[in-house]
Image (cartoon, rainbow, N blue to C red; front, side):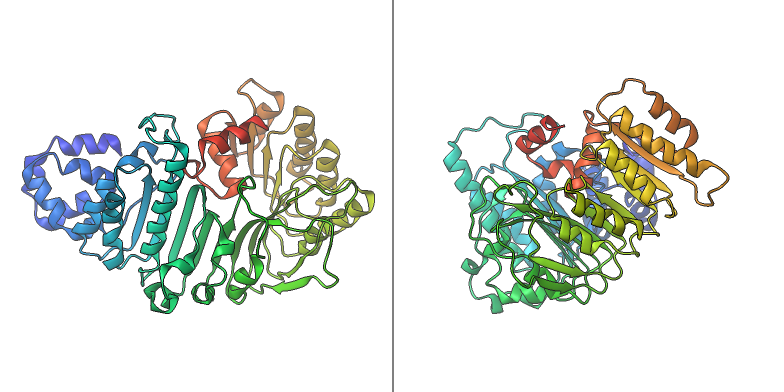
Length: 484
């Protein structure tokens, strides 16, 4: 697209002579970042672009091709919101602190209140460097003052959100974690947001327990099809936690996709009757439930929630989930499966593998670095009846990859109707490997990434956390990669 931008910018006179409909069609191929550059080509172009509000109705944002340095371009969003007269469907707003003044941030957010935005995505972060490690400023304030500035900024964001009465999709990401009590924002019944019925809600690193007293928030997700409620920062987590599932289950009749990352507050006791949550429409579940304190050896884990998901097709279970939680989620409808690290206790392992064997519709199987060679071999055997079409291998050693290769080899033979047609390998190095070469030769749709390269990091990060690379703090990325 950049080459097309350069070519078009060389032709100001020719484009200016075209009918308005044709020139608008040409400009429609560019996103708002590029339109902001094209405005500077000539006065006639500036007039054409600024007076045509249809060009500013949608931020054509591609997370995979995004230039993170554009996180500095807040002025562009002010212009976009002004020029579309509030008739805007989607806004992606990256806020990169510190702002010079709180007033500057509020002036940036103010147009959103009067807009008709339906899809709002806000990322607020206070790193001194952008995700590509370009230094944008030298912090000139103390850490304590920066923390206060960040909390004030996030409060301003939430005060704006509760005034948006047309939202259908809302994604809020805080880097680092944010502590804001939404009951401080006045009477909830007077919020325009209280009448909203969201289709999608995603909140990452926001202390969701402070939101739960607000019944109006429960109602906003009562018809939601997708919910992400994740808090990955245990360091700053206080231990007066609230169970997130009563909140999520408000959407039990409509929910189709859910990603939940939360902490269990009492690792040594299990309720006599765990609560059962029923999600009749749920198709995708990414579950990461961590114990705040370490469990004793051979402890079966805590089952504080049970789930009934008869239509579940995608199950991604992190190793911290209790064995019982994973066991009761495995069902015959699953088509995409990842269980990181099978239990070591013999009886728990037997029960899990018996349930896996009954998952006869699995089409995509994912292996991670936590899986032992024995685990991989056993999973391949248990799923021999499944119509596998795709395998994903994340940071596997060569010996482990050999076991996957054996399974793929068998399925490429004439005895299997369903062939493995797609494979993805994320490795620690770009050094040649016999196994990678074999997959590249025999699998028609093959991709290979190095985890030390940005693309490989983004693939793993998004798969595991649901976060794009520019939504993760520099410290978290460093900790994550040092554990690989």
